[in-house]
Image 1 (tube, rainbow, N blue to C red):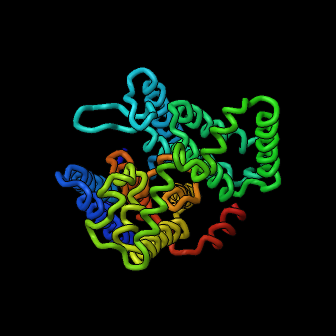
Image 2: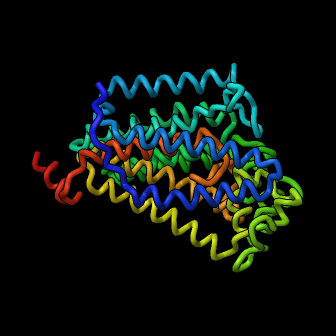
Image 3: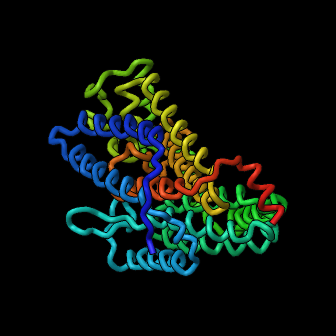
Length: 373
């Protein structure tokens, strides 16, 4: 049963998202004469805020029910499987359902579902969490969507799914020694495949993926144009609507994957630093919510959301400035795309719903309380 209460919204968190949303909308409108990207994204912003405020009134303690979470998890796994038969191919990946009026990308909601499942799994086992079996059991929840998304192929989203699991495993209290053993096994497996299984052309694909600027006439073209756009913005930027890399269509996907480069060209170093600062403030507000979570479930859920956003931000900005592989990862609240924006605000809405039960004591005191149980 879903119980509604008075919302406990973190208005600072909302305030910090608004300039980023605005920056994305302004960047889209400045490079598209017909304004189609701007209009669609503006509509999704309104819809997403509607979900955010609506969910803020809901008491989400019912999500602690294992059967419910496994049902949601199974539903999105099924959707990922159906993509291979009914999905539409966009940007080389078969990861969307074309519903006519918009394209639905299940993996964005799978990320949120995985965070909920792992938060529930680890929160129930805080006493025996150092047992190595919990690394392997929790990894199964990650591996199923990871493999399905990797085969689409959507390497970027698969990487985010792995980072969510790895990050939540680190903060859950699992033995770092056991985790190191698992990581070591993974490295050994990769080395065996590299020297004994993979062919030369497969190795070259991996190398070009890891170092895209090594081939600026081929696979590294997008990353190269992105670094030019960022650099040409210099200190103060060229001004709104004067970004030549995007206007002359040298910069691809300037409304999604490379929107940070398009924005940096117009607003320069100062504008880029301001956006990064706003992202840091958003993460700070999420971590503050984690600090005062009512139980381990609320704490781990908030930490999982923070890990997901940080991964998106670092990977997207990194690939825009040529330091990270080009993976197709969107920039939260800024890139064009309804599925990612909606899932992000649903995650924050659930977080606000969970804030209604937060404690006034510090997390360290909570840890002592749990240990004394």
